[in-house]
Image (tube, rainbow over all chains, first blue to last red; front, side, top):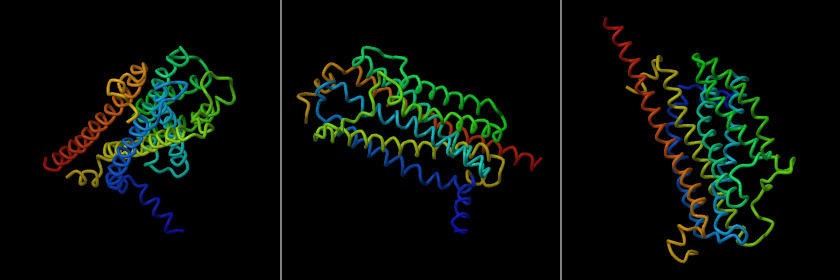
Amino acid sequence: MENFKIRWFHWAAPQTFYPLAGRLWPVFGLIAAVLAVAGLYLGFFVAPTDFQQGEGYRIIFVHVPVSWMSMVIYLAMAFWAFLGFTFNTRLSGMMTQALAPTGAMFTFLSLWTGALWGKPMWGAWWVWDARLTSELILFFLYMGYIALTSAIDDPRRADRAGGLLALVGAVNVPIIYFSVKWWNTLHQGASVSVTKGSSMAQTMLWAMLLMALALWAYSIAMALYRVRSIILVRERHTQWAQEVDA
Amino acid sequence: MIWASWDAFWAMGGYGPYVWGSYGVVLLCIAIEIFSARAAQRASVHSVRTMQEETDHDATS
């Protein structure tokens, strides 16, 4: 047990995590590419036309995965922020920062693909219902985190201030998730017509899950790639960083 | 193949602009993110090099 604990802290050092992340990101990148190709193939060439929404429903294969990731990444940031406050490890703040741009991007894409789906199906690009509004707040939280951490020069202080925002803002995530239950929203409830039980719903579900897993792998690859840049800049005055590059 | 033709595929039963507008922007964002992350990595490698030259310079002078 003691040994196990030491190993975790061993990898938590930027110096040891840098080469590890360098070895891991291509693996996750490859997994993401393979899963995305499989998911898109299933979604566009196997899954049949929806009897209610025609071909327009195919937006679901990207809309639901990006929306899930927008919430998952924020929770991951809160998790790293929590570790940072608990163990005072430097890597935690760097991981929080490495995740933010990808999370912000997926939140924007959730709103964007949602608008393009809402227009033909609801007749509106945007409505101020609980689901859409809380997702918009999530986007502002990401933007706030990025603005706050980049405005503070001292990296350790930036980590603490940003970490606090990540932790407090995490309250919004369950609000987004349960908004369709708690309020009467125009946005449909937890979809995936599994209740139909047909083979059609099965291929749709698989396409969506493959795309979701692809974006999971992509997010991990991206965070690992980005954290290396952050580590290098912060450690540029150290011996090991200068040797890594030499 | 569930599509009668490639034209039918791109038309998406009349939802073409919405479907491709969604997937296109997702692809574009991912491309921009990968591109900017690579630029950031190059910049951070550069910042280490600059630091190195400074310390080397300090050592020799």
